[in-house]
Image (cartoon, rainbow, N blue to C red; front, side, top):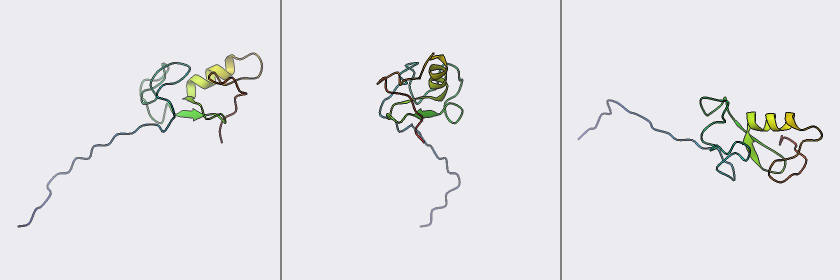
Length: 84
């Protein structure tokens, strides 16, 4: 008996590999997007700090720009530095 595949439909799922499930700033899920975006994914990536806390890119940029002096991580209050 020989089987021939006529159609094939792939299904996939993705998640960010963060230690938490939600952004510490906007409290939205990482598998979703920040309040400023309409769709999750490459347009709304996660950004990690040296302290290993992750946030939506747009959320941490707003946070850093709103600080009057040196920016600190909203979770651990260490000096904020983007992980390179």
